[in-house]
Amino acid sequence: MPTQERIKKVKRILSLRQPDLRIVLEDVTNTHNASAVVRTCDAAGILYLDIISPSKEPFPVNEAISTRAEKWLQLCYHTSTSECLEHLKKKGFKIVATHLKEKSIPHTDLDYTQPTAFVFGNESEGISTEALNLSDHIIKIPMIGMAQSLNLSVSVGIILYEAMKQRQAKGFYKKRRLSKEEFEIFMNKWLGLTSNNSNKT
Image (cartoon, rainbow, N blue to C red; front, side, top):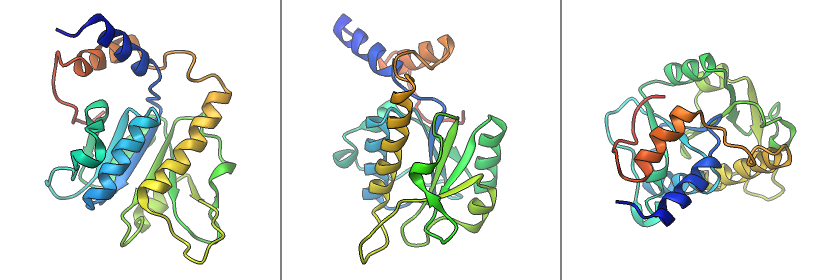
Protein backbone atom coordinates (compact mmCIF):
# COMPACT_ATOMS: atom_id res chain seq x y z
CA MET A 1 0.00 0.00 0.00
CA PRO A 2 1.25 3.53 -0.75
CA THR A 3 2.40 5.61 2.19
CA GLN A 4 0.63 8.80 3.25
CA GLU A 5 3.64 10.77 2.03
CA ARG A 6 3.34 9.14 -1.40
CA ILE A 7 -0.39 9.81 -1.56
CA LYS A 8 0.17 13.45 -0.65
CA LYS A 9 2.80 13.88 -3.37
CA VAL A 10 0.62 12.23 -6.02
CA LYS A 11 -2.32 14.47 -5.12
CA ARG A 12 -0.14 17.57 -5.33
CA ILE A 13 1.39 16.73 -8.71
CA LEU A 14 -1.87 15.51 -10.21
CA SER A 15 -3.58 18.73 -9.14
CA LEU A 16 -1.13 20.64 -11.37
CA ARG A 17 -1.84 18.59 -14.50
CA GLN A 18 -3.30 20.46 -17.48
CA PRO A 19 -5.76 18.13 -19.25
CA ASP A 20 -6.62 20.77 -21.85
CA LEU A 21 -3.03 21.08 -23.07
CA ARG A 22 -1.92 18.14 -25.20
CA ILE A 23 1.06 17.09 -27.29
CA VAL A 24 0.48 15.17 -30.52
CA LEU A 25 3.35 13.24 -32.11
CA GLU A 26 2.89 12.29 -35.75
CA ASP A 27 4.88 9.24 -36.89
CA VAL A 28 7.72 9.77 -34.42
CA THR A 29 9.82 6.61 -34.36
CA ASN A 30 13.19 7.78 -33.01
CA THR A 31 13.52 6.26 -29.54
CA HIS A 32 15.78 8.98 -28.15
CA ASN A 33 13.47 11.77 -29.29
CA ALA A 34 10.29 10.04 -28.19
CA SER A 35 11.71 9.32 -24.75
CA ALA A 36 12.94 12.87 -24.27
CA VAL A 37 9.51 14.24 -25.26
CA VAL A 38 7.84 12.00 -22.68
CA ARG A 39 10.12 13.34 -19.97
CA THR A 40 9.51 16.94 -21.07
CA CYS A 41 5.73 16.45 -21.06
CA ASP A 42 5.78 15.17 -17.50
CA ALA A 43 7.93 18.08 -16.36
CA ALA A 44 5.53 20.58 -17.97
CA GLY A 45 2.39 19.16 -16.40
CA ILE A 46 1.04 17.45 -19.51
CA LEU A 47 -1.33 14.56 -18.85
CA TYR A 48 -2.33 13.37 -22.33
CA LEU A 49 0.18 12.49 -25.05
CA ASP A 50 -1.42 11.64 -28.40
CA ILE A 51 0.52 9.31 -30.67
CA ILE A 52 -0.30 8.99 -34.37
CA SER A 53 1.11 5.84 -35.91
CA PRO A 54 -0.46 3.60 -38.58
CA SER A 55 1.70 0.70 -37.40
CA LYS A 56 0.94 -1.38 -34.35
CA GLU A 57 4.46 -1.05 -33.02
CA PRO A 58 4.63 0.12 -29.39
CA PHE A 59 5.67 3.69 -28.75
CA PRO A 60 9.51 3.64 -28.67
CA VAL A 61 10.36 4.72 -25.11
CA ASN A 62 13.81 4.21 -23.61
CA GLU A 63 13.39 4.26 -19.83
CA ALA A 64 17.00 5.37 -19.34
CA ILE A 65 16.12 8.60 -21.17
CA SER A 66 12.49 9.03 -20.13
CA THR A 67 13.28 8.13 -16.49
CA ARG A 68 9.99 6.21 -16.67
CA ALA A 69 8.02 9.45 -16.97
CA GLU A 70 5.58 7.58 -19.23
CA LYS A 71 4.06 6.20 -16.02
CA TRP A 72 2.64 9.67 -15.33
CA LEU A 73 1.15 10.24 -18.80
CA GLN A 74 -1.92 8.91 -20.54
CA LEU A 75 -0.76 7.66 -23.93
CA CYS A 76 -3.56 7.94 -26.51
CA TYR A 77 -2.99 6.00 -29.73
CA HIS A 78 -4.43 6.93 -33.13
CA THR A 79 -4.03 5.17 -36.47
CA SER A 80 -4.32 8.27 -38.66
CA THR A 81 -3.73 12.01 -38.51
CA SER A 82 -7.28 12.89 -39.54
CA GLU A 83 -8.80 10.57 -36.93
CA CYS A 84 -6.67 12.06 -34.16
CA LEU A 85 -7.09 15.72 -35.01
CA GLU A 86 -10.81 15.48 -35.76
CA HIS A 87 -11.26 13.70 -32.42
CA LEU A 88 -9.48 16.54 -30.61
CA LYS A 89 -11.41 19.21 -32.52
CA LYS A 90 -14.69 17.62 -31.41
CA LYS A 91 -13.44 17.85 -27.82
CA GLY A 92 -12.96 21.59 -28.26
CA PHE A 93 -9.21 21.75 -28.85
CA LYS A 94 -7.51 24.24 -31.13
CA ILE A 95 -4.98 22.40 -33.29
CA VAL A 96 -1.60 24.13 -33.45
CA ALA A 97 0.96 22.77 -35.90
CA THR A 98 4.66 23.48 -35.57
CA HIS A 99 6.18 24.18 -38.97
CA LEU A 100 8.87 26.53 -40.24
CA LYS A 101 7.27 28.36 -43.15
CA GLU A 102 6.93 31.96 -44.23
CA LYS A 103 3.38 32.42 -42.97
CA SER A 104 3.94 30.70 -39.63
CA ILE A 105 3.55 32.98 -36.62
CA PRO A 106 5.97 33.14 -33.66
CA HIS A 107 5.03 30.63 -30.96
CA THR A 108 4.76 33.43 -28.40
CA ASP A 109 1.93 35.15 -30.31
CA LEU A 110 -0.83 32.65 -29.48
CA ASP A 111 -3.05 32.34 -26.41
CA TYR A 112 -2.33 28.97 -24.79
CA THR A 113 -4.84 29.40 -21.98
CA GLN A 114 -7.42 27.92 -24.35
CA PRO A 115 -7.66 24.13 -24.93
CA THR A 116 -4.70 23.53 -27.23
CA ALA A 117 -3.15 20.50 -28.93
CA PHE A 118 0.35 20.98 -30.37
CA VAL A 119 1.24 18.76 -33.33
CA PHE A 120 4.85 17.77 -34.00
CA GLY A 121 6.12 15.67 -36.91
CA ASN A 122 9.18 13.47 -37.06
CA GLU A 123 12.58 15.00 -37.69
CA SER A 124 13.22 13.45 -41.08
CA GLU A 125 9.97 14.43 -42.83
CA GLY A 126 8.41 16.97 -40.50
CA ILE A 127 4.68 17.45 -40.10
CA SER A 128 2.37 16.13 -42.82
CA THR A 129 0.36 18.23 -45.25
CA GLU A 130 -2.77 16.64 -43.82
CA ALA A 131 -1.91 17.85 -40.32
CA LEU A 132 -1.18 21.35 -41.62
CA ASN A 133 -4.51 21.47 -43.42
CA LEU A 134 -6.39 20.41 -40.29
CA SER A 135 -4.61 22.91 -38.05
CA ASP A 136 -6.20 26.10 -36.74
CA HIS A 137 -2.82 27.80 -36.35
CA ILE A 138 0.71 27.19 -37.61
CA ILE A 139 3.56 28.39 -35.42
CA LYS A 140 7.33 28.54 -35.53
CA ILE A 141 10.09 29.08 -33.00
CA PRO A 142 12.09 32.14 -34.12
CA MET A 143 15.77 31.31 -34.66
CA ILE A 144 18.77 33.45 -35.54
CA GLY A 145 21.34 30.75 -36.27
CA MET A 146 22.59 29.21 -39.49
CA ALA A 147 20.80 25.92 -38.81
CA GLN A 148 17.09 26.68 -38.91
CA SER A 149 15.98 23.60 -37.02
CA LEU A 150 15.80 22.23 -33.50
CA ASN A 151 15.73 18.77 -31.98
CA LEU A 152 12.15 17.54 -31.49
CA SER A 153 12.29 17.42 -27.70
CA VAL A 154 13.88 20.88 -27.55
CA SER A 155 11.05 22.30 -29.67
CA VAL A 156 8.46 20.66 -27.43
CA GLY A 157 10.18 22.08 -24.36
CA ILE A 158 10.36 25.64 -25.69
CA ILE A 159 6.70 25.70 -26.68
CA LEU A 160 5.49 24.07 -23.47
CA TYR A 161 7.49 26.58 -21.44
CA GLU A 162 5.61 29.40 -23.17
CA ALA A 163 2.30 27.65 -22.47
CA MET A 164 3.26 27.19 -18.81
CA LYS A 165 4.27 30.83 -18.50
CA GLN A 166 0.94 32.03 -19.89
CA ARG A 167 -1.06 29.67 -17.72
CA GLN A 168 0.86 30.53 -14.58
CA ALA A 169 0.15 34.21 -15.21
CA LYS A 170 -3.58 33.39 -15.34
CA GLY A 171 -3.49 31.26 -12.18
CA PHE A 172 -4.13 27.95 -13.91
CA TYR A 173 -1.92 26.05 -11.47
CA LYS A 174 -3.68 27.32 -8.35
CA LYS A 175 -6.82 25.27 -8.89
CA ARG A 176 -7.28 21.63 -9.83
CA ARG A 177 -8.27 21.35 -13.50
CA LEU A 178 -9.23 17.69 -13.59
CA SER A 179 -12.81 16.67 -12.88
CA LYS A 180 -13.40 14.72 -9.66
CA GLU A 181 -13.90 11.53 -11.67
CA GLU A 182 -10.72 11.99 -13.72
CA PHE A 183 -8.75 12.85 -10.61
CA GLU A 184 -9.82 9.64 -8.86
CA ILE A 185 -9.05 7.52 -11.92
CA PHE A 186 -5.52 8.90 -12.25
CA MET A 187 -4.95 8.81 -8.50
CA ASN A 188 -5.56 5.06 -8.54
CA LYS A 189 -3.31 4.57 -11.58
CA TRP A 190 -0.48 6.63 -10.19
CA LEU A 191 -0.64 4.88 -6.84
CA GLY A 192 -0.45 1.52 -8.58
CA LEU A 193 -3.95 0.47 -7.59
CA THR A 194 -4.94 0.06 -11.25
CA SER A 195 -2.87 -0.35 -14.42
CA ASN A 196 -3.05 0.74 -18.08
CA ASN A 197 -1.82 4.16 -19.11
CA SER A 198 -2.60 3.60 -22.78
CA ASN A 199 -6.01 4.19 -24.31
CA LYS A 200 -8.01 6.75 -26.20
CA THR A 201 -9.40 9.76 -24.36
